[in-house]
Image 1: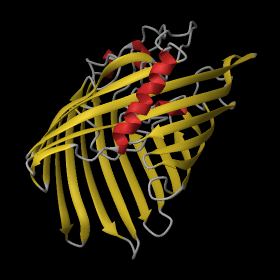
Image 2: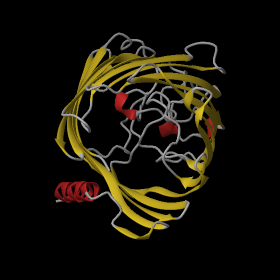
Image 3: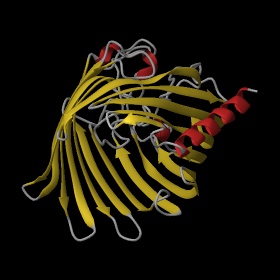
Image 4: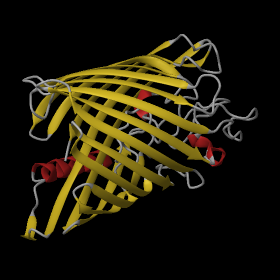
Length: 373
């Protein structure tokens, strides 16, 4: 019954996405939009090591709907959105054992406020946001999971056609309590500089440099400490042993020809760690399910155990830090606002403290229907 209700919610969000233009506009100063996105996923994971002689397999499905309402009042936009999840598993029930790993950035049986923000744009080159809003910095999944929202405030300055650049901008953001789960004792402060410059007739180069500082990481709840180095002691009680001051550099080369292309290269390091403190991310995307019929994406990543704070990276990679591996994502357009994706991943927990699974390659497959708003 609940699965049917989740599917109905998915259809509702798809319908709202199809009608995502402004449904009411009294004049140019006032607007109202109902939009959203949704996900239906089936996933299978093989060869997860439990002990040196035992592996297990996971098979689970998930439904997610995230509708939102945005009201425009001249230069001010107010927004509120919900996050509705229902999954086969109850992922807040940690598995018993001496080394529990809790990898998800969502509660599988939950309805919650996802967005609640005010955004003010007094001029074309400045924007101020406050509340719980979409991350305004174009991080990759290595640094920030797209499902998470910073809770705090942000100031963005963006100057167009400046000194031969298409744009150059800076963003400063402060946040606290940004996770789905309890992280009220941990705060984040970051600054980012971005530039876009032409790189040929149909190409442009996007450069992004960021500094991300996390404070009071020892106050993270045990379920969010994940793979990062801990103070010696029982895993359920030991706080994180290091601070995280992360420098992140990203370059994106976009091609806008008949077949869109995107090449991504990223390097990050945690300046507070002396070992296992770096991460690399490389991706190639060909095609689009928005302007075309198919899209292919290949990603390779190698993320050391303490390259970044693992509580906030993408949960789709089984382990957020301490791994390396590959992902292939084949997308097919299913409608004006939807796409079907087949995703395969092959990765290993290279920095596992257990040792016996450092060189074991885990296979993960997913089928997804994504609806975008």
